[in-house]
Each structure stands twice: as C-alpha cells, then as structure tokens.
Image 1 (cartoon, each protein chain N blue to C red):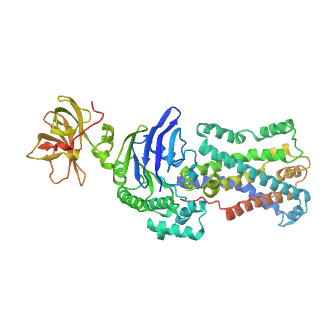
Image 2: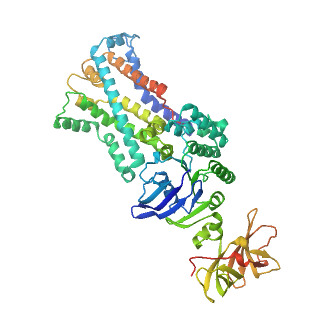
Length: 260
Length: 352
C-alpha cells in the first residue's frame, strides 16, 4: 500500500518537472503564428525561421563559448580546490567548504551587482567578456568542487604514496593515478558547470557587454515583444544541445563510477 | 646491497615527541622488525625511512649516504602498505609496470622482469586481472611483487598481514620470509604482532613510547627481555620476588623463592639477602600430580587446541600462569605440583 503511494508520489513529481518541457517541445512544432499548446498543426516552420535568425544563432554561439571557457576554468580551479580541501585543509576544512559554497548561498543578483561594481572599480568594466566569464566561473565553481570532493573522499592517499615509492613525481602521480580515479567526479562536475553556465541569466544580464547576448538573454529580449513558436523552438534546441553534451561526454570520457 | 643506518632519529608533532632519538644499524640483507603497540612510533619511523614523513632531527643513511633530504620518489625503496594500495584502474601487470616505467626500463626488459617477479609470487596466470578480482592474499602478493620488481635498495612493509585471516597470515609469513631470503634485500617490517616479528626477523626492535626498549634476535627478546614491559609484550610472563641465597663461583647467584631455587647471572653484584624481581615464562614451568616441586591448586584452565593455559595458586597465596601441552589435563580445584628448572629464570634489568 505504502509502496503504491510512494510510486504515485514520485510520478507526480516527475510529471511536474517534465511536463512543462514536453509542452515547450510540443509547442515548437506549431504551424500557427502564436505560441499555443496543443499546437495548431505540426510543422518545422519555426525551426526554419530560427536557423535564418542571425541574432539567435549568434546568441547560441556566445552561450556555448562562454560555457566552454567557464567550464574549463571552473574545472581546473574547482579540482585543485577539492584536492586541497580533502587532503590538506586539516583544521581549515569547514572554512574552506563554506568559502567554496558561498556563491550558492548568496542570491545571484547580489553576486551580479557586487561583481558589476567591482569590475568598474578596478577599471576592467564590461567592454570585454572577462567580467561575464568571472561571474560564470564563480557560480559554477561550487558544482565542480562538490563533485570532485565527493570522488576524492573515496580516494585512498596510500595510492599516491605507493606511486611515490615507485618513483613517480607529483605531476605523474596526479596524471597517472589520481586523475583517472577521480575522473567521474571531475567530468560530472564539469558537466554541471557547463549546463548551469549555459542557463545563467542574472549574472549574464548584468555583466554582458553592449551588443553581446547569451541565449537566455536573447530569448528574454525576444519574448518581451514577440510571442511566436520560435521561442519554443529555441528552447527545444537548447534542451537538445544540453542532452548532446551529456551523451557525448558519457560516450567519450565515461561518467560511470569506477567500481573497485 | 644496502646497509641502513639510523642515527638519533627524532620526530616531533608539535609538543608530542613520536620518535625520540632512536639509533639502529640494519645490516645488508637483514630482516628487521619494528615491534610495539600502536602509537609507539614504529610506523612513523618506517615513514621517515620511506620519506613520507619529514625528520625533526637525526640521520638516515643508505650505505653511508644521508637521505633525509632526498624525496621519497628518489629514495629507491619498495614499500608494501597495510591495505596494499594497489592501483584499482590498472591490471596486475599494469601495477607492476608502473615503477619500471618511472625508471624508463625498456619494454622487452620490463616484460621479462614482470614475468619473473609474478612467477616468484605465483601469480603468472593473474597478470591481466584487476585488483578487485583478486582475493586478499593475492592482492598482498601483488603488492609485494610491485615493490620488488623495481629492485629497490630496501624493502619496507607496514603491517602487511593485518588484514588477512589467521591461517593465511601464517602462510604469508613464511612466504614473505622465503622471498626476502631469496632476493637478499634489506628489509624493515613494522608489526604489532609479536609472533610475526619472532618468526620472520633476523632481529627485532621492540619500541615503546618512541624509544627502543630492546633490540636483539627473536630468542634474545623472548628469553632475555630487558624489562617487564618487553617481557609482557612478547608473551605471558610470571614475575616473582626472590631472595639471594649465595654468590656462586662463576659470577652467578643462587636465589630462592616460592617455586624453589633459581640460578641467574649476577651483573649487578648482588649480595646475600637482597631481594630481586625475576621472570619466568609460563611454558617453562612443569606441572605434575606427584611432584617434584611445590604444591599448588588449579584456579582455572583454558584449552586452546594445541596448548593448555592454567592459573595456579601456590601455598603462599601467590598466583602463577602455567602453559603446557594438553597431554595431561587438570580441572579446577585439582591439587598439583609445579616445578621450574633453576636455569629458566631471568633477572629483570630494571628490577631493584
């Protein structure tokens, strides 16, 4: 009895999570001129419109670029921070964790405003992508940190010691022993970072340079004045893009946990 | 191959002195055990020899060369860890190849050496398995092979048998000892198990509280322990007070006590009538129904397969432990006679 209740409960949660996405996907195949659901006739009309829309294509390219760069930076800094946190922090452990998680605890809009003041105060400003990437790294860092720390908890420091006794220097130990063994955590963390960066709105909105927009900003801009199914088509494509990134990563780098 | 010389080695953690100025000279090809309870500094000492712990003061010399400032990866040591620390993402052969790759050994030679060592640990057929596919004993042998294949100057083992079951542990003792003899490598073995240290070592270093309590052959440690602590750590022991009866011609003294007479060396120039503390192993005492010896009552008896442990009460009320083969058995309350040959006692150095 209680199992049935639990199953139903889970199904309802999934329905609430997934139904809106399905609605958007459905609406994107609309043949009519307005964003409605159920769609009035099926067609790829709005996908055609999208692929001829320079502004959206440029926004997607910007988003991918920003996400890729921030993921690489977050991946490197987050992994190094996690190694320090798990193996060397000692008594500082609690402090390091709170500091690393702080970007998640603060409202994004506060972080964005603070960064905006900061980049102008130090004279960098928002003419380049620099400020936006700093913001994206800041928001995505905790996800890399948490994932890598979790894999490191099951990493036995004796493995590093054994490698050392066999003659491996610090870099070789990292590349040949530690990295392969914490790989699922690093890749998982980077995937989170990429997807979240792709999705960030507030930070991008505050720190973007004039004339450049990421996809969420462009979409927001568009929806203020238009209400065509093109917006649904864009959303659907960004969902597909995210899925492609996950699947390709899984295929070529492996997300599966190493079983011992 | 290599002689290891440790001089006044000290390790401080803040105000806590984990290792307090120990000195040992380990001869070329010798198998030496660091034996002691947990926290006695034996593992810290091993880690300092390996290079995993900094040295607070003192020297560690391999063939006369001080290695204190040489990082672990350049000390040329082979180490076996308590939990084996095999690389889980590499096969057995991969684990063995790692150290050889670091030494840039040519491929063909590498395969030869791996094959030779795998043969030595009887795991040739398991070269392509992953560590998780092996039993504890097999993993242990791979760990040993991985440490030996690089042909290091010295072999260090940190409680390598602690995670194995009793029967396997005994097999592995002989196995490791055999291989060490065959390779002839200078070996330092850390353990808290006195039986392990006794059966495997050329010499045993007993450590308490960061200091060396005694260093000697297993039979020296067992039969002539220098202190009550050492005597109790390496086995059961009966302590008793005896009185000096007379000084014998060959620099020995005759003592008398609750179990009869004892004859021991007299290094402290004891005089007649002085009271001393002597020790006697439970298995050195004979027990019989009719005598000879003092009469005693059986307080309790424990059967452990090959041996019987008794606790007896003597006529003067003192208690002693006796261990015998279970050929003749006595029950609680039985009256028996106990006797110990006069030369089985030894005088404790720190006795008054």
